[in-house]
Structure formats: structure tokens, C-alpha cells
Amino acid sequence: MNGFVTKQLGLVPYQQAYQLQLETHNLVASALTPPTLLLLEHPRVVTHGRKDDDETNLIVPKAMLEAQGIEVVNTERGGTVTYHGPGQLVAYAIFPVGRRVRDFLRRLENVQIRLLETYGVFARPNPGYAGVYVDNDKIGSIGVAIKRNVALHGLAINLNTDLADFNLIVPCGLTDTHMTSLAKILNQKIDMQDARDRLEKAFAEEFKDYHWLEELAGREVSYA
Image (cartoon, rainbow, N blue to C red; front, side, top):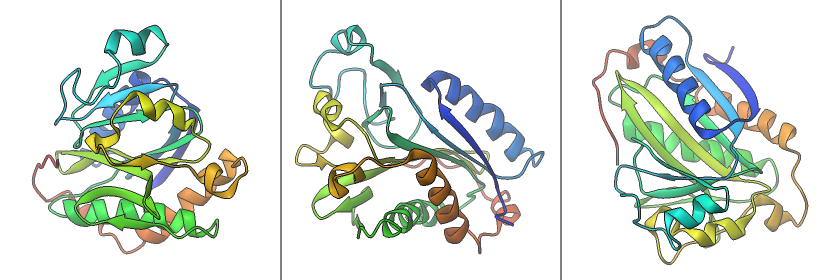
């Protein structure tokens, strides 16, 4: 038993996925459903975290992004701006966190590291920055919010992502950061279904010792 349930959803528009997150979050926070992991991809979308405003860290104006069919959305997650698109695997971990916010973030990093290890790729965290790096390039991002002691949002890892779209923003507000993908590193296309299965297993391994119900007794936190 994983201690959580997983829903593999395919390609889902951002706003539709967000509404599903809210509905699931309410059920988990009310202890009416187990912790839930949503695995999916998004059509092209730029999301701002709580540290951003509508134009901060955009290389091109919002109107130009929207003219290219790229949605621009403000969110309550921590961090600044990021990009989601087809070929990027997104995991929304609707998990009880309580007071263990920093521990939860480190576990999300570890999940990404575990996943990449299954492909023979060594990844590492970057102290002081949320996310995962291969050499000096960033491959995985993290941004969460905690309400009623339960997490919203989660992580995104670049598998077959079109990296050119990251040139439209300043990723995570870091001007010296370059993005990479697993497909670029391995010089081959990644099977997304296989990657979803591997990521679910990585979550199960990383959170096997997690005390879910105890975390519901924590306090409300927002993390930047």
C-alpha cells in the first residue's frame, strides 16, 4: 500500500486541473479521501507564484504569450514564474503536510532524484533553491502552498519538454539558470506512460514512512 491514491490524467488544461486540485484538497483536508497524487501534463501555460506579478520575469509581454496560445495564470503557490507544457510531467501531491513543510519540499526533490536515477541520470538539489539540477542545468521545479495542513501544487520535471518555451520567461526568476530535459540528456524521446509509472513508484518509496494522519493536526502555512 502506498498510503495515497494516484490518478493518471493525461493532458489537462491548467484551470481544469486546478479545480480538480481544489476539490481533491477539500476531501483530503476533511479526511474524506486518502492523500492523492495527480499525474498529468498541461497544454502550454505560464504560471506566476506569489512572489510575481503579471509582468515580472516575462521576457515577452503577456499579450504576446497569449497570442501564441500560451495561457498566463496567477497562482497561490510559492516561488515565481514557471512554464508547463506537453512532455513535462507534473505531479500535484495533495498530501497532509502539517508543520513539516521543509521536509515535504526536500522529499519532493528526492522524488525527482529517484525518478532520474532509474534512467541512469544523477541529479542533485541546489541549496537555497527549490528544484533539481543535472550538472548546472535545472530539470525539475517545485512550488507548493499549504492550506488546512494539506499541500496544493507540487513538482514538474522536464522529460520531452520543448525547452525553447522557457526562453519566453526567466525560469523561477533566476537569470543565470538554464533548463534541460531528460530527452536532451539521453538524446532520446521518453515514454511518458513509463515515466508516470516510475514517478508513482518514486513517490511510494520516498513517502513510505510518512505519517499522513498526524500531519493533519498541524497548522496552516504558505511557503515561499
